[in-house]
Length: 423
Ligand code: FA5
Ligand code: MG
Image (spheres, rainbow, N blue to C red):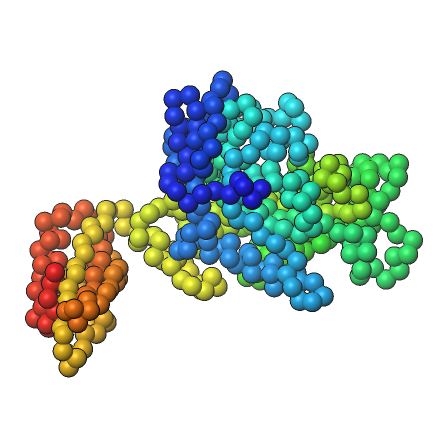
């Protein structure tokens, strides 16, 4: 796993003539290859690790929920978190390890992005379940980008982000709160598969797992959206869990599916070398949760590099309440201004005075102003500042000429009022 973490170099993935290169590894293409350069360009962007992206903020809130509410006797968090596992997985990991039948629709080339007949871009973070369990973990979250040949609409996009959660319990752990559990077992021999349990599980184990799973996830939903959130459980089917459910929340008057979950198929645990534990798992869609939390109307916005979008989420405390304000559809015009501050200390330069000046001259055409660079020149004994001014009209496209006139005026006034020397 460690050797498969995505690198920082960009582009992380390219489609060459007869091969695909991802994170420095070359994969030969074949008849199953169907990834497009557009989708490959998303590999390595790691929005879930980018400060200032709403997906980063919401994942921090999810992490905090798990860190705070699930601790061992010594007070240490029991969940460990993996957010940097490469999205390139084998077909075996994505499907077979999860008991997805050979003929299941999700295997069709029309559903997933194949690198070749052996490798693909993961279609869900569940692709890592078996391997992480096998490595000895009992409680973990996997956060990452996933890829599907899905419809594109306001709530669907071919690349999105999931958080996978898995928790395993020994018999003692699962029965800790049961008053008299001496005659209880988590397993049942010669049991039957029923709508609410697997053949290997006792009814007590199945019910306690369901309770723990639903409590954990409903607790998360209320932690994210507040006590008044409308949410409901819907029965579901996944090849890798039984029983299975989906959680839906009310979003703009409609039920929106935000996660799938269930009791892990015992066969998967066995294949990972586990004999004496049972467990639950879930997979949630980060974009869906963030759309609800921040009132983001369209899933494509998460990929925006527009600073009018990103700056709204540039906070250090993930609990800061944020309500997305729609940005203008007209393009930004970006001009920088650099100047030497006056040498003498009696005319101290005040940053906020400069911001004020920019606002006075630029008015509503100025969307943002911020310091992008500052340094001190030891020989000159003077400081230099560089500010970026982002201009945008709310009702029409600004021309560069118009912006230049305003920008020049700002330069003139800065010279006059603050005695700066424009560079
Ligand atoms: C899965 O991916 C399962 N691996 C979830 C799971 C994990 C079940 C562990 C049981 C145990 P599903 O395909 O329903 O399930 O996707 C899970 C969530 O991802 C959805 O609830 C939704 O929030 C989100 N999602 C699915 N497709 C898209 C899409 N095209 N765009 C954005 N979000 C999506
Ligand atoms: Mg689903």
